[in-house]
Amino acid sequence: MSNDVDDPQAEEGSYAESAATGEEGEERGFRKYWIAAVAIIVVIIVLIIVICKSIFR
Image 1: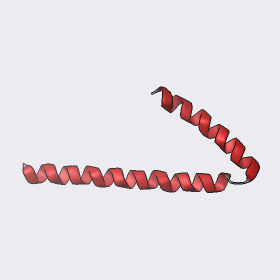
Image 2 (image 1 turned 30 degrees about the horizontal axis):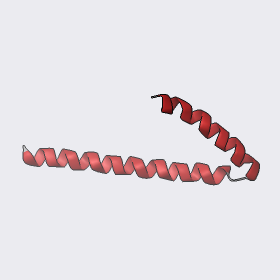
Image 3 (image 1 turned 90 degrees about the vertical axis):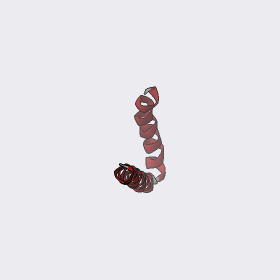
């Protein structure tokens, strides 16, 4: 749980550094796609588990 608290501070620091180089937009866009990809994978895994449970009942 302590890592979750530290992450926003680290992200703010990386945003501040990337803002100076003009790469902030690319990083945020990449993170949005990465978060979306992870969310989709999690949803697919949950659906597979639910389907397997319904089959083996």
